[in-house]
Length: 101
Image 1 (cartoon, rainbow, N blue to C red):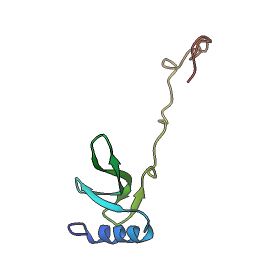
Image 2: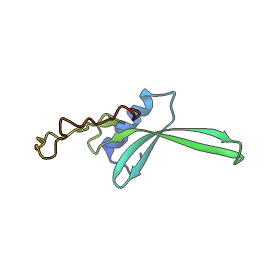
Image 3: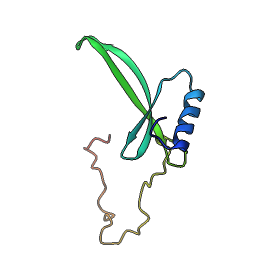
Image 4: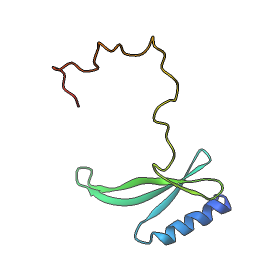
C-alpha cells in the first residue's frame, strides 16, 4: 500500500490473500486505517451502479487487525449505588398496564 506504514500494508495484503472471494479496500481516516469489504449493485432509480462498502475492522499501527465488534465494551459501571438514588422497594419499574418491549 502506497502511503501506509509497512506493518499496516503487510497485514492488509495478508488479509486480502486470506479472503480471495471478497474485494477489500484500505481506508485511511485521521491516521487510522480501516478495512472495508466493497461490492456494487445497480440502482434502478438512479440508473447507475452504486458502490456498497461494509466496515470489517481496523488495522493498528503495529499491524494488528481488530475485527468490527471485537473491542471490549464496559456494559455497566462498577460504582456502588447510594441508597438515595436507589429505587424504593414499593415502586416497580413497570406498571401492569404498560407494555414491555
